[in-house]
Amino acid sequence: MSRPEETLPPDLFYNDSESRKYTTSSRILSIQSAMTHRALELLSLTSPSLILDVGCGSGLSGEILSNISPSEGGPHMWVGMDISASMLDIALQRDVEGDLLLADIGQGVPFRAGAFDAAISISAIQWLCNAESSEVSPQGRLARFFNGLYASLRRGGRACCQFYPKNEAQRNMISEAAIKAGFGAGILEDDPGTKNSKLYLVLTVGGEEAKGGGGDITGIVRGMEDVDIVDARKRVREHRKKEEKKGSKAWILRKKDQMERKGKIVKPSSKYTGRKRGPTF
Image 1 (cartoon, rainbow, N blue to C red):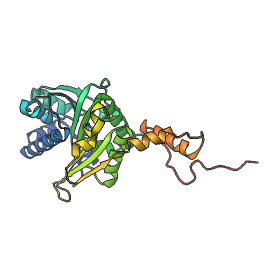
Image 2: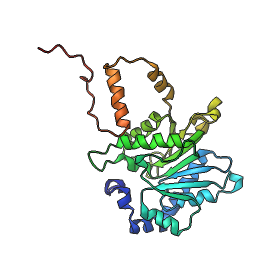
Image 3: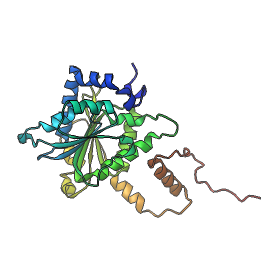
Image 4: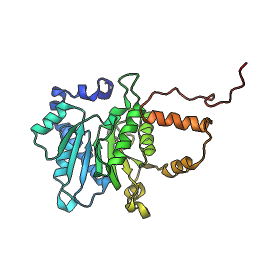
């Protein structure tokens, strides 16, 4: 059975019929609820917060955010964004409490800097890994999304994205895009090695809370099992400090990486990239 993201773009796949089917399925409601509560646990919010729901669909996760009890740090306010007009229409019919925005996350996150305390995403970001045409770069869409998400979160903010990668390559592509945007990133896997396996990408934005590990990714997952932590921020900063001679291989590779992050198509690198060429006659 093919994966939904391999058949059609999300705005076409989730038409009126599929959106209603998704929202009324008792199985999906149960799974969505469990994953949302797990994501909230990983966010470790201790007080009512303003949360961005990425790929909010018909507002199933948002409804949970609105109903978190004060003893658990809620209730939370939220803003949802989704590319499917049909999904958002059902959310309006259900009279959810959050604000809704019709937008493509692959084009960025269009909110002012530091607007949100946290972000949550359930089963959405793997859609960014599929190119609908040769002019569309999955790396560029991921870069625009994570760069925008990073900017929209306050210093010390966190995000948790549950996703279903097709393979190890997609998993790495997603986590690397988050790291390049500046996040501290950790991947937590529930029920590894089973058909019920769930992956959670936990992201942190450096800030005052991060001093001493309190707001960093290591503070969130300390003591948890089956945690794979990747934090390349220090390495990236040190790399940027190095002086690169214009025209060198390192300079060319960095420029190509910048172009990919902007969503442009670039030729693949090889052992000949940046090589010195002899004089022409």
